Image (cartoon, rainbow, N blue to C red):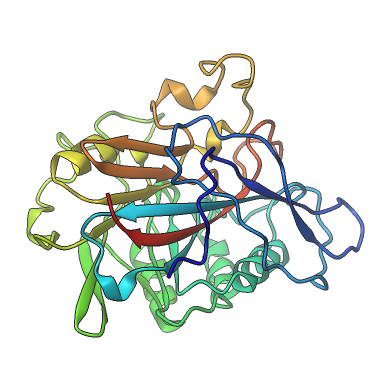
Length: 318
């Protein structure tokens, strides 16, 4: 039985956190439609957040809580109503402290997801910060655990192996071109994770450049079962759809971070690198969701791209 009720028109919830003061947070309906046509998959719901959690931050002000009802034709009955939280692009550093990340962790835990998924970019440039972000994220709680993939900043900082080991020591599994089937009552939901990859050079960094996205992924896909891909770069979606992967989850873009998409959808810096900037997409009956992330790069500013916590509810059906 689904815990989210379809409402017809796609709508979202936001949570405002008053900046630079101590306050209890609350969730409220923004009343604004998303820019993607999700055909009822993105739904409104009464919030289950409770007053009492405290926050002292300006960067986390107006954090977006996106509630999505995701229909998967191959979802096993045992997973009907399964709730998944997604966090991405924490970017611990001078503009995002471990204390702020712990606040995000508490916000996420309040929604009592069955599974938490992380889609990369835990640090900015300094590998010395990886211990702090791992420690902060270790507070995440879900009955089926916390699973993630790595992003380009872990690759460029040269800390992929170390941070993977640190996460493992705190019972968080990072998938590096591997799968992790979750079983309930003998039925399986297959999670797949890959490292960051791109078909073109991005800035001065040649690492992660490939000639084909998701090369060699076929053995990790379970046929006739629901497969979910964790890939930091949303540009892998076209290849994932060609492979028949039911749902891809990504980050990387920060939703544009500073955009004017409410004027024109092309007024976003992220559109220079991907058509998949933020939100929900569908291709060949396969779906993608691009999370806007929590942290920032360059400057601690977000405009028309608020930090985001995403809650998915998986239901059976086309």
